[in-house]
Image (cartoon, rainbow, N blue to C red; front, top):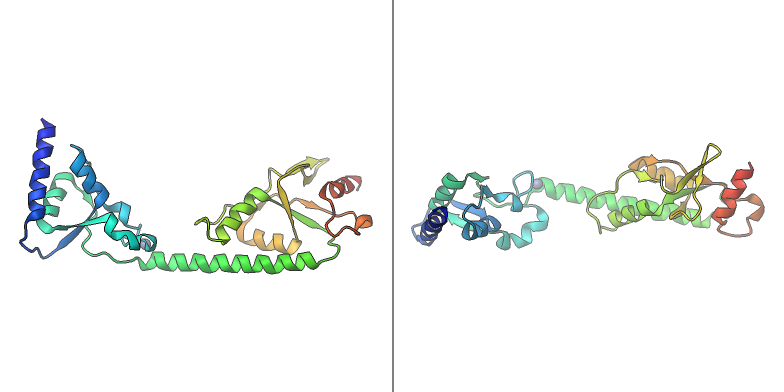
Amino acid sequence: KSNEEALKDRRRVTGLLSVTEPSLLQFYVSRQWLNKFKTFAEPGPISNDNFLCSHGGVPPAKAAFMDDLVVMLPQNAWDHLYSRYGGGPAVNHLYVCHTCQTEIEKLEKRRRTELDMFVRLNKAFQEEESPLIIYCISMQWFREWEGFVKGKDNDPPGPIDNSKIAINKNGHLTLRQGADSGQISEETWNFLHSIHGGGPLVTVRPNVSHTNASHPELEASSQSKEKI
Ligand SMILES: [Zn+2]
């Protein structure tokens, strides 16, 4: 039966692993796959991809856990496993991927640049006494972006998506009542939009006659827009 066969095979590999005869090449194999091999009759092809990046190196984030992820095999054990199960790729040298490292550093720089610019533009917006126009931004998108620039999420957010905060009133897009949105300046919008794209543009014009409030109420302003 295949179970007995697999058992025999496991014993054989265990034997090969305990051979002390030194081999010229050492092969690194996924510990996860080797555990499958020890547990299941049909472990499937050797899958070393769980400790490799797409460039064939070690992803920088995994470099510290390499001992947990790989097992070093002598050449004859690898030869045996590879001829029986296929897969791979063969790995004789573990190195931290330079391409991935560069990409991580580039992303880190991008995060800092976007965050610094936003803080600067938003500070200017806070100091503006009576902005003529306020741009609205979906807080759902903004939180994703914030997670990215603060390094909580790895990937940049998709394009700005204001579709949930916008409502069409007499052919004009305006802020939906009760929408989960935030207020930013035209400069901040242009900055975020130039990088991330998306839309639609949702703006409100604060009622000029009520500028005694430092932050004009959005509902009032959208109503005032209706009057125009
Ligand atoms: Zn890489």
